Length: 117
Length: 177
Image 1 (cartoon, rainbow over the protein chains, first blue to last red):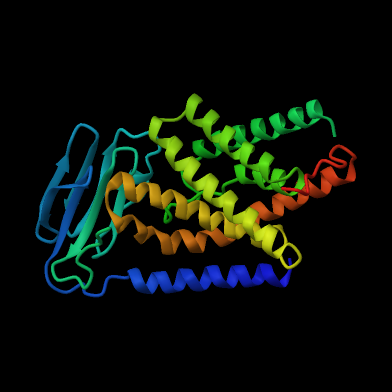
Image 2 (spheres, each protein chain N blue to C red):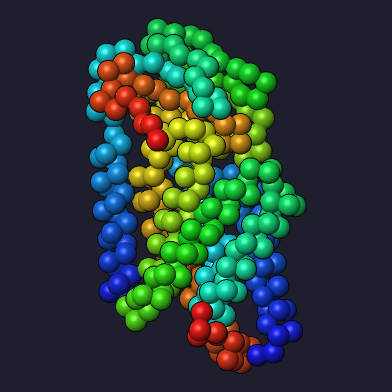
C-alpha cells in the first residue's frame, strides 16, 4: 500500500462522513408520513404513527404498524427490500429496485422538501 | 503474446468474472444493515485485465461479463445497472492508473473503483425510480466501498503476483493503452 492509496481511502471516508451529515434528516418533529412511490408516482401517503395499515399491489406489500414500516413481501428476485428490515425515522427508506418501488418516511416539515432534477 | 493466446486468456477472465458475479448474486446480503452492498469480486478479473493486459481488454472483460450475466440470469433492467457501475468504475480506475501510476497501488485504485461502481448504479436507480432520494444510500455505500474495495485490491494483488511468477503473460501488457 502506497501513500496515494491512503489518500484515496481518507478522501472516501471523509466524503462518506460529509454525505452522512448532508443526508441526515434535520427535523424529526411534527407528524411523519409514510410515502410509497411507484414508477415515480406517489401511490400511498399515511401518517407514520397511530396507523395500522398496509399498501400492496401485485408485486409488493408494505406494512405500517406502531410507528414502524417494513416490506413484508416482494416478488422480486433479489429480495433486498424484504431484507432491509424495519424503518421508523424521517429520511429512512426502503427501495425495491426491480419493482421500482420506494418507501420513504417524510417529516411533515422536513428541511429537505424534495430533490428535483 | 500472439492473438489466439490473448483471446483465450481474455475468455478465461470473462468466464471467471461471470461465474463469480453470479455466485455473489446468490448470497443474500453481505451485511443486513447495508441493503444491496456486496464485495464486487468480479472486479478482481477486470482490474487484473487492466493492469496485466491493458485498458481495451479490461473494458472488454467488463462489457462481455455484464452482457453474459444479464443474458443468462438477469432481468432486462439489470444490464443497465451492471453496465453503468462497471463502466464508470473501470473508467475511474483506468484514469487513476494513467495519472498516478507511481503513487497508487491496486488497493487505492480498487477502492476508488468500488466507489464509482456504486455511484454509477445509484445514478441508474435514480433514473429508473425517477427520484433523487436514492442518493440517500450514497453515504453508506461510500463507506462500504473502502473495505470491499481493499478486499478486491488485495485479491487482485495476489492473483497478479501468482501470474507474474509464470511467463503466461510475458509481454502481454499493451503500454499504448
